[in-house]
Image 1: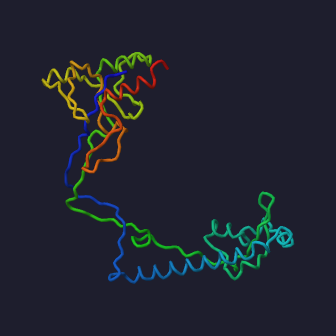
Image 2: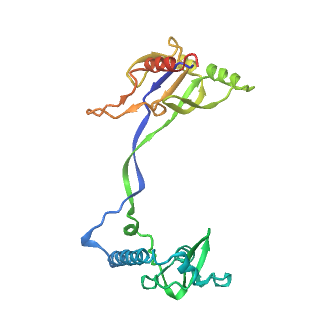
Length: 265
């Protein structure tokens, strides 16, 4: 088990020109003729479908197997002119008119069950609508100086080369891997090989602070791996003061839980 330290994410704030998809907000006082027509057509379509649904429900008990099989069977040559309600909708973007639901002209069998079929002149085209902000409820907005936040190392970490060498040997590799996917309880991310201790010596910096505010010495504490906060999934809701809360009280608490849960397995 590597000796792990979890540090806060490195987030960078900056301003940039961006294009963002946002919820479309209606302005009753500034609706265009196109938008007003869309609302009218949409309401008409809703009413039309409701009429069709009412008729379909009315004739469900009428269209029994004997009733439908008394009609002519739809022939293969009639595929394009006689279809079920579902067939007209999916194949031709058409629907059976509500006043024609009661008058099927053919029947078709599917999985041993008979379904009513209708002639093309008993149908009408289903109205389609162009994609507009007001029709899909989304709009594209451009901002010149939008405040952005980037997590530079989201879901990433690094492991000392010596520890990566051990992993490579366990995997039977004839080289030291440069990166691995790591999965542990409440931990997941991508870890790259990095000379942690050499970097600490070269830069004369060996102290780091974890997400709980505890200080660690990379050399004295023999740290094998440094993970960013975004790799650690044991987050709880933030406190009333806006502070991040954790399921565990420290990294030692995490190790103790792992040992008690998995030791001997």
